[in-house]
Image 1 (cartoon, one colour):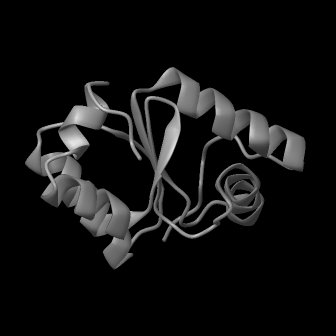
Image 2 (image 1 turned 180 degrees about the vertical axis):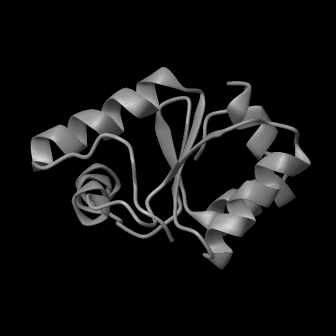
Length: 116
């Protein structure tokens, strides 16, 4: 997998700040792991509507667990992917795929429809 070369977060507060800042800075953010079929579902959904998203790959990060704990605190789930659009968690791979199949994902990205 190789070694992670970026900044790591050592405390829950640092991880929570990283998650919050990342979500606020980008329209679409996915926290993912390599080889996850659920992450693939989410990636495919966004590719199908030609929407770029920032992907935070947790695989190989020494702070993976602490970031997932921050996601748990924020979304009540620590599984990946955790997908955020316009600052709001829309769920994981199955939820993102379902929204796309319903024709709602693009509307949510464009801010035209609130996620129910």
